[in-house]
Length: 138
Image (cartoon, rainbow, N blue to C red; front, side, top):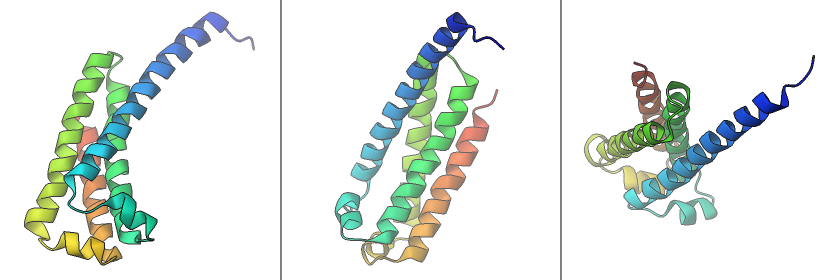
């Protein structure tokens, strides 16, 4: 079995662009998500707050799922960016809905290291991410 270097080089170039763009989107989403929360995840996680870590981890996974789906649905970086932007907005809105409407004291719960509440928030983020990802097929 011989390696077709030209095909690999072309594929590797596409991989690097897609992976780099997805990693950038994930980093920007993480920052925007943290800005959308009234608590300081970095500080809480640094203090050993498992609830903050679980909630943030769920948000990251919840956003990575539709990014992965978008990568499989388009090879166009602009279209990928549009899907990523839409998915990020939906993820942040879902989190805001949970924190402000469904569990109004979620902030206090996360700050008090209530892991059960964090798991609920993380599960919601992952669930919304799965629906986001599945909805990108057309």
